[in-house]
Image (cartoon, rainbow, N blue to C red; front, side):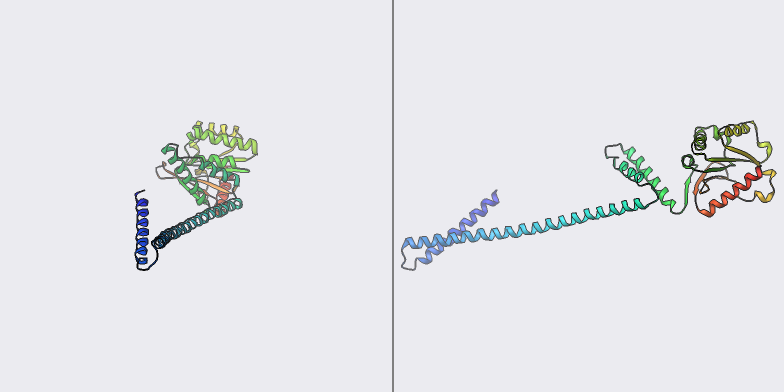
Amino acid sequence: MGSSRLVLMTRGLVTVIVGGAVYLVAGVSDQPVAWRINLAVLVGGAALIIQFMIDFAQRVDGLSGELNRNRQETADLVGESFARISRATELFDQVEMSALRADGVVRLVNSATNVDSEVPVLVRAFAQAEVRKLTSLLESMSRHVVDRDAEDHEWIVTLTQCARMSIDGISASMDHHFWDSETGLRYLYAQREAIQTRAVRVRRLFMVAQPADVDTALERQFEDQRALGIEVRVLALSDVPPSMRIGATNDFVVFDGELSYEVVFDLAGVNATTTLNFQPERVRERVRRFDELWAAAL
């Protein structure tokens, strides 16, 4: 407000000075006083108008610059928006062309957007960790080999639920008490469902060092699993020729002849590494090894 008042006062002062100067200059002539006053008012008014026109031109220039900046900002914003739309369209096209069902991927993205900032920090961190795990899993699949520290029972249950034709597994180093645990029972239940609902053939080969290792508890496991429709055999390594002992004898399960689920324990039999391997040559080797040992158990 003070600045505007000062500008008006300055303009008025300039107008008065210009008009007074014109009146004084016109005084050297013989023109009447009224004429000189009219001339001074006219020139002073012209000076005032010129000042307003200069100020208006400056404001127009400033407004033009502001409009140019706004236009550029708008253009940049529109460009970024179209870039996002183009990227989103490209990603959606890739999802449509991928081997995964598009509706499942879209549902995953929609669910991720529903995790808002109001949920607890711990919940957000947990969700982010699960997203990272899933991302790492999908990235590893491009190499046809997925590794994870420790034994992943969720993987084996999910694979059992997805199997369509066959599940062939060797139980060599697994603790036989595993089958009575909550995880073991879930695994057996999934196999029973696969047998009864999808006619999946399930074969399990138990491997022991010698026949004396087959105790009453293990025999009960054989009968329990056979009652579920699982084909069960046991093989004592002491009964097979040395040439057959050469090769993989660790725990592995082949699903549909397409993927090998493998578990390797350390020397202490504690820490394990779980691997999903669906390289064709690896799966063929596992299928051949299982068939060889299965026939020997006969």
